[in-house]
Each structure stands twice: as C-alpha cells, then as structure tokens.
Length: 230
Image (cartoon, rainbow, N blue to C red):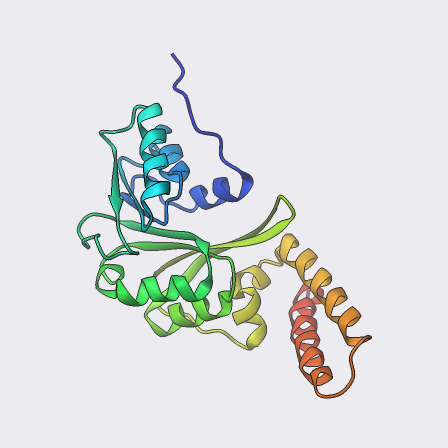
C-alpha cells in the first residue's frame, strides 16, 4: 500500500531537496514540521528533530507527525534556536523561514554545534548578504544555491559545508556567487524587476537619496553583466 506523503509548496520542496540523503536532520523553526515529515516519510533521511521556540507550532507539528505515523522517527523539541541540540544528534541543520539577522543569531549562539555538523541548509527571508558574509568568515563555503519564485515571492536556498569561500564584489554577497556563476534564470528575472523598481524610485527622488539609489542600480548592473559574459 502506498504511504501517505505530505504535500510541500515549491519553496519547501526546494529546501527539502538540499538535504543530503541519509543524514539526520535538525529543523530549526520547524513550524508545522512539513519538511522533516516529507523527508522521513519518503525514506530520504532516517530521522529528524523538529524544533521550535513556540509551543503552538510545535503542537501542530506533533499532530502532523502522528497523522503520518512517524512518531518513532521524528522527535519534537521545544528550543530557542539550537540551544537544546547536541552536536552528536544531527548531520544537517536546516534554518528557513526567518530573517537573516535572526539566522545569524541562531548560528552564532549555536556555534559549538554548527562546528560539528556536516551541512547547513539556510533560506533567509531578508539580509541574505549578512548570512553569506557570516558563513565566509566562520569557515563555511556555499556549495549549492538556488532561487525560486513561489506564490509571488522570491526565495533563495543555500547549502553550506565546512570550507573556505571568497566573495568578489558586493553583487556576489547580495545576489549569490554561485547563482551568478550559474546564470540562474530566476535571479536574472529578480534583478530586472529590482532594477525597474529602483529606476522608478529614482525618477521621483531628488537630493541625497538619489546617490544611494544609483549605487543600488550600479550593483544590480554589475550582477546583470554576468549574464552577458560568454
């Protein structure tokens, strides 16, 4: 009999695809637990710890885990970030669905754990350049990065492992070294929309703010130039 499987949005399915087969997952800020349920339910990973700082989402995740009969493989845990996770419990740490600064706070406070795990899967909703800079300065290299348009919003997902990586120019920090190297089509669409938005703003401004907007457009143009290279 075919097993029931949770249906994921495009964004969550992309995130799930970044988790290495056979790894033990710690999903930080799990919300309803959909990604661990999907991965364990499909036998992609053997087990997971679904963690959240709030009791409400964790209770919902618990209900979902029970509904799919995965209580023996997915552990639910109330935790502020990585605080209640030991370095021996997971191979992969997933942090998605929150702002870049919050992700940095979680990574920094959980540095002892992050130094021992195999991979980080991150999907910041804002200030992603700060996350890339943090990874670069703390012994991580981004080895895979993709962008998706899901329900009208753009999301970036990245996988980082222990290693070194350098970013050349603000365009790589802002928009992703690998995305630019791979000439990601979704990123190009995003860049063109951003340039149009800032040009529209520029046409309505005067005075000091003009220079800041021009600087943003200049960085976007440098990123778009990557798509013209042969």
